[in-house]
Length: 70
Image 1: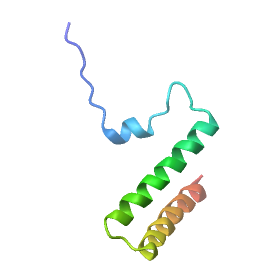
Image 2: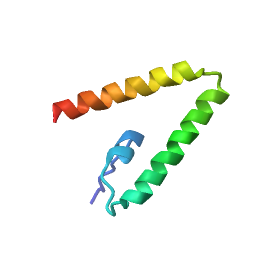
Image 3: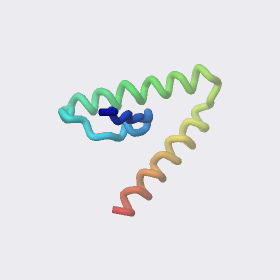
């Protein structure tokens, strides 16, 4: 009998709910590490603080829109 082959994209992997939810402190620490890493990477690639603030503002706008849809 043929087996079904499924392909998972990176986005599906990231957005799929985890089978074992991470505890809140672990997620908070992960977000803190991710934020610092993104900031450091942007600065090392020549982005100015004003440009990083513009990026953060855009992300906040997207999250706000998402929250308003719920």
